[in-house]
Image (cartoon, rainbow, N blue to C red; front, side):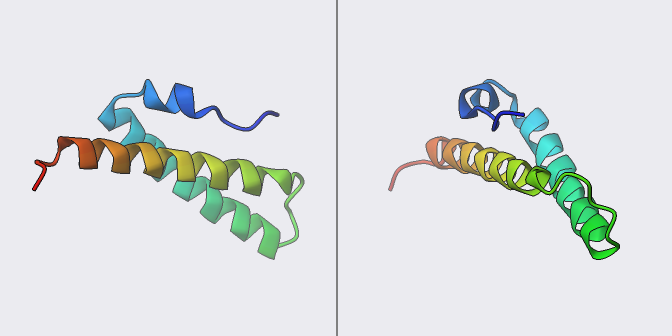
Length: 71
């Protein structure tokens, strides 16, 4: 599984980004829970989820800064 591409993330709408942020945070929570109970089969999913979350938050922050009036 390849790492997520930020170009695809930039194509999403604001609503989709917010939904994916929530979903990715939930996925990370579930992965941590699986790891704590020794049921985690694919530990590389942690990295993919963290990268995806970072990209989503970066795009969200870029949009907020570009929408804010310049001082």
